Image (tube, rainbow, N blue to C red):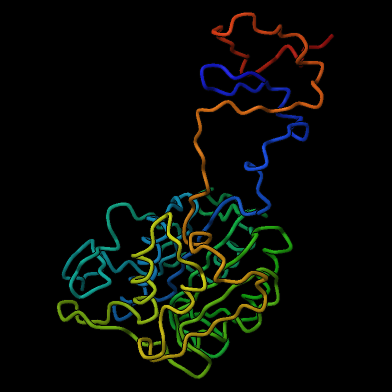
Length: 345
């Protein structure tokens, strides 16, 4: 290994022997969190459910703004309100009557649209049991280092959530799907967020570790809409998501806000319903977990022009052939594919 012109050059052979490299302590982290994914689902159809697509697109906009790329966001939208014939402003979806933000925008990537938003496809997505031929962009490719955000909005009841007014997923089915995720090492930590009537009933059956959950209403309570847009004629966002979005809009990638702060964004005077929280399956103090651990994707980075000394305990024999550099300013390039290592003797 050599450092030339500020670039660290590592030969191919060392990549197979990473356990022999001793990195400085400040570059080593004990956290197993390495990447972020988001599964955002609107389960409702029909124009009068306009607010539900505004809910999910609002959360989509926030996580994308905070750094989670579209390639790691799975967006399921049961109806396309932007193209609905009743929409007086085609190709737009607003979450505020003052029309501050068009949450549909020009760069929304919907992965499951219309009648693709089914209980079967949702469970297949979570568990990785995709049908043959499913595009890579429509798969949740999370791993044991992934922090996964699951957001659901729609119409629900005690122990179930409707999909397209034609089927439903029960809280037990959801809990079992998440357990499959854990058994298959598809998440490190999971944040479950749901905005629907009697929403807390959907996390009651969870039994897998490392899950933090929040719901817009308790069992027996309705989750209420926030306000109506007279120009559209329907409610355009729900109370809980409206307050959550108001909080997230003040969060930046380097924010000191925590998940504990987020869990209290909508007190009963604002939501009218009682926000439910479940944290008995989550081993950490939410007030010590940055909100960007779930809603962002910015990892701590340090850029330095200083030389980093790396100690090698042993050097593989394949690296003994290159001679030491005689001139400090000499240029050194290794073959991208060292085919000679695989030639038959």
